[in-house]
Structures are given as C-alpha cells and as structure tokens.
Length: 152
Figure 1: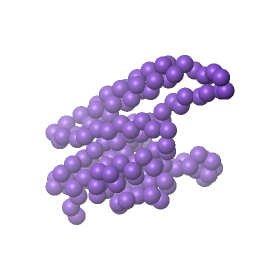
Figure 2: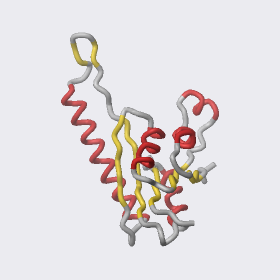
Figure 3: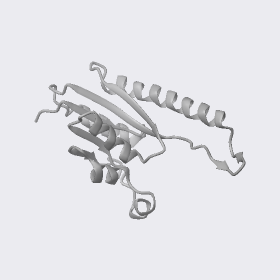
C-alpha cells in the first residue's frame, strides 16, 4: 500500500510515544511525507461585562509560551523516533477539539493516513469528555490507524 502523507498524532504522553514507537517500525520506505502533529488548547480570554478575568497580554504570553514549548517537545520526539528521516512537526493551537483539528489538518494537507494512539479511557470518561479517537473516526477524510494502549 502506498502512502503519500502520513500524520502521526501525539499528545506527547507515554501512550502516544508507545504508538509512535510501534508505527515507526512499520512505515513503508516509500512514504513521501511524515508529519508529527499535536493539538493544544488555547487558553481563552474570559470577559465579565466591563472587565477581564485575566489580563489579555498574560493570556497571549501563556499561549505563545505553550506553543513554543510543545514545538520543542515535538521536535525532540521527531529526532528520537526518526533520527534518519526528515519528519515535519506541526503544533496546532486552537480552542476547538483536537479530533476536529486533526481531521481539518488531514483534509487540508491531503493526508492518506492518520495514526493515533488510544488511551483506552473508560466508558464514563468518554461519555462526559468525549474521545479524540472517536471524533477523528467520525470526521476523518482518510483511513485511520488506531494503536491500542499497550499498558492496558
């Protein structure tokens, strides 16, 4: 099977790193482009009529610092798992859900495959919080490979 562009999603957790370690050994040599992708939640500006809860400049600095930190962490993961390959690293900062952002990025960048690790959250957690994997599967523009949590 030929893939032009594979996205490997990560939240930089141990479970995500296990999924990356698993898939690294199985990616065909013919893949033209590999992208490591993480989505971070922006800290929103909260306004009460007539005043701010937190200074907007503080929120902007927080979001900027978080983005820079995640980019460095993602670059480190790329170097660790793909030392001999050129791998793109993308950090998306958004108030939207990670699942929706992953699917939007995949569609806009004509990706052939999304690889995502499953944390294996329980029924109640998925019921109230929602699962990124479930959102990706529901909204995906391409095939998805879900790597189960090896710690379960």
